[in-house]
Amino acid sequence: MLRSPRNLLLCLLALLAPGAPVLAASLEAQVQDAARRAVLDTADREGWVAPELQFAPLAARPAPACAGGWDVTVQDTRSLSRLRLAAHCPASPALPAQSFVLRASLSAEVLVARQAVASGRALAEDDVELQRRDISQASDALGRLEDALGQAPRSSLRPGQILQKRQLTPAQLVRRGEHVRIVARSEGIEVHGAGEALDAGARDAVVRVRNSASGRVISARVLDSGLVEPVR
Image (cartoon, rainbow, N blue to C red; front, side, top):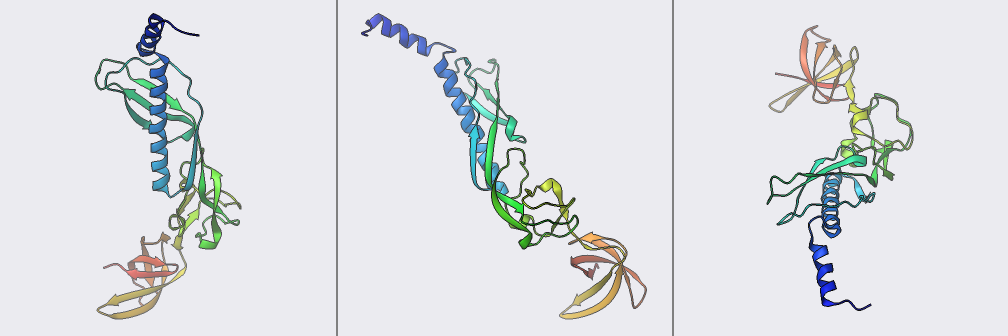
C-alpha cells in the first residue's frame, strides 16, 4: 500500500521519538554484547576451552533517549544465571541508570575427575581429563591442568565430577608424625638426614621437624612428599 509523504514523515518521527522500541532494542543488544565480552574474558582467564555462551531473551522495554549513546558497565558476573549490568547516559547525568539482569548458560571443556579420588589425596595427571560441560552453576570450574596438580579434594571426587576451586586445597605433602628426609645445601655441598615432622604442611609450608640424630627441633620448608629443607 502506498503511503503519502505526510504518513511517511509521521512514521519516521515515531521511530525517532524518545522511548521508541528501536532505541530499547539497540540498548538491549549493547547490554548483551557487554555481558558476552565479560564472560568470555573470564573464560580466557580461567582457561576454559572452547566456551559457548547463550543468553535468555531480554524482555523488550522502552528506553529514554540518550544523546551520544549509553555507557554500559558490568556490575556482577559471579553467577552466570544472574549477570547484572547497568547503562548510564554520560551526556545526561540526571537521567536514571537502566538496570539489567541477564540469564546466561555457558558450556566449555573443563577438567573433570576421570576416576574416583579420595579426599586429601594429591591429584595426578591421570586423575583428570577435559570434557565439555555446562558450567553455568560452576563459575569456579578449573580448565588448566597446572591449576589442579598438587591440589587435593576436600571431599571424595566421583568419576565425571567437575573440578572446582572451592572443592580443592593444597595437598599435604608432609603429615604430622611421619618420617621425613632433611636435605641441607650450601655452596655445592648437600647433606641428608632423617627427621620426624611435628606439623603437617603443603608445598612451601614451613613446619617443625625433629632431627633424628640430634633430637633438635628445626624449622623446615616442605619441598616434596616427605622431603624438607632447613630454613635459615
